[in-house]
Amino acid sequence: MIDLNRFFTADEIRGKYQVPSSLFAKIINAIPFHYEDEEGVRYYIESRVDRFFEEYGKRMETPSAPVHGMPAQYPDNTDPDGPVPPDRLRLSGKVYQDITKKGWLLLQCLWQREWVVIDDVMEHVYGHDYEQCDETLYSLCKRTSSLLITQGCPAEIKRKAGYIMLEVYSGRPGESPRL
Image (cartoon, rainbow, N blue to C red; front, side):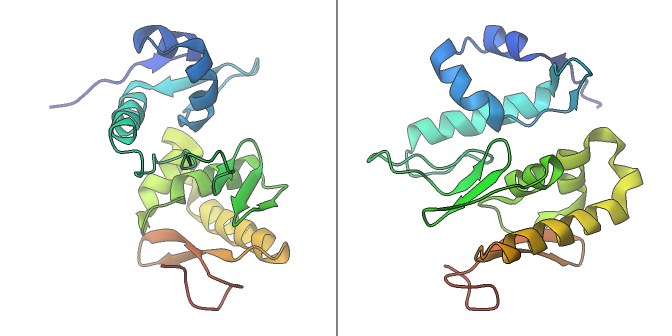
């Protein structure tokens, strides 16, 4: 059976899922979008939006569980680690900046996940036309990883046998990973 996906704008998402405006403003950037037109209107795929709200609902039931694409929330209001829109990554209280839009989408996709299948990463970063981007993805991984290392960020992007992951270290890259 083939599932058909509809495209939603942000306003349509807010209406369909009945999300209060104050909460919606906080979560909309964590929902992966599929396409952005020339006027800056973003279009979201229904199944991805459904998946996001399913994970978000689980997060609300169990506060310690992270929601993919959203930084974990801490009760003491400290700034959480994770990708920060539109072009930053926060780790251990430090903020690493000037990440490209595609690099940020890559980090968002990999954040708090084990090895991610390359096809899933390519779809998240490049959308449905990803089949044309194999070498582009490898180059993006290398450039984004180099940018983080250059800034002294204790993380790097690794590829292995059809998978990609963001490895976060307890110190500098090359030292033992954080558990």
